[in-house]
Image 1: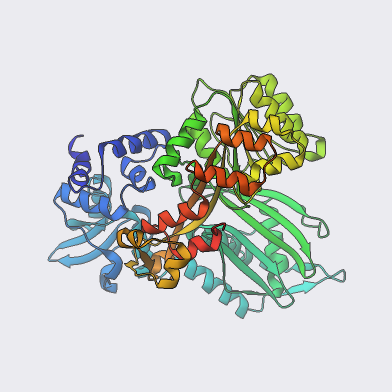
Image 2: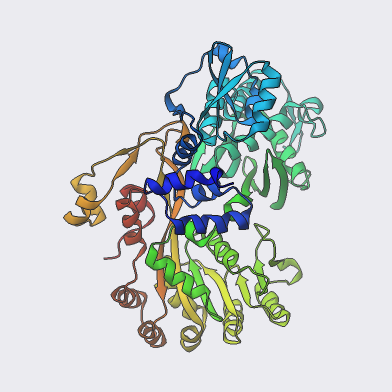
Length: 571
């Protein structure tokens, strides 16, 4: 058992991993059920390639960088694509009777025995990271999900599958082409491929929008919409009907908005798609939000706090009562941050209840209530009933009105820790918003203990990042001092397969954490404006969003233009 963990000692020896980081990763691994090395990568203490190199050294094997490797077709034919994908192995080269294969885990004896049985020859192994092997499989076998979706769209566009138009203007699909009960029907396969492709590309949303002569398909990847190849307009009705059937919506309803959910398993991932349909002038537009359970299995450490803000926020959630507000626009990661806090607090000794509209992710061990306005089950009503359930921690999805805010404040004043969100641009603005809603300033100052604003910035792709020297104009826009520029580590992504040629892969939050100190409470009680409160908070050490973002630029995590895209320095 000790031998298997030797790679930790190797990483520690090289100065990339500390004992404290290993303990934190072990806690995450125990909580989420993943391997320790995967937890280390999730926490971004090490990269997959660093772990793979250390494992190769531990077992006396050779590490191979697959980014520039081309494998001969004759070698690829020795192992079928299905076996390669199922076992995450890649044939590399022959040496006499021995076949060299690339694997991520040299201790997985079962895979080696299976390959020896299939190939009837000895094998030896090289080591690479799991994601690098999967990308290389997609590249070499030439049958990635993206390519198959492209070919399917082209195939359907070139065929004469017919979709007629009924007199009332609605689309009707040909029985053979659009039958949702035929699993091999072209439309069914295309819909499955669209979802699979979106998941592979790490998309958060799928947008299917009808226009006069085409259907536009777009994915939101790392916060940016990316357009896929368009379909002919005649396919719109069939696509819409298929997705409606999956979401258990009314196919005949074409004039009203509809909402539903699709639950499916894709490989080893359990996915939940939140479906929204609205009527437009060219037909119904459908948006599917992909809810991946892996996205909420995050700890506070993974959110991207600076060391100082992490200690402050951790101290806030350890308080027995009070309100903690998270602010920011839609899509800024507020839900993820709140769930990370709840995951930290979720122990058998605490009762946690949430009121959400809607419940996006299901959290084990937490009582979650979905708001249903149609039957009068709104936030205020749920909070009122929550208090009779004797909870320790309450999450209110959003403080939208005076009644909800008043109930949340009453809950905090009666000994409960309350989490909630507000749609404001910065942390100081949340105080003004609550007062504008009609909450008396003395209640705001006595209940709110901390406010955190956040945004998401794209992070530089680790596979293709290159050192970069910012221009004088960029340095001035970032307000960097000469000392910061001298000490900073600047990178830019060149663009590769790993990041779809964008130079960015993944996102990281930037934060603005305002503690309710006595000075801030006094200003709030006096009805001070947002700029005055912000200035006071900065004088007490609060870093605004812009400053926190630029610190991540200096650390080589993101770029100046990314921070400027989501945050500006208030003059």
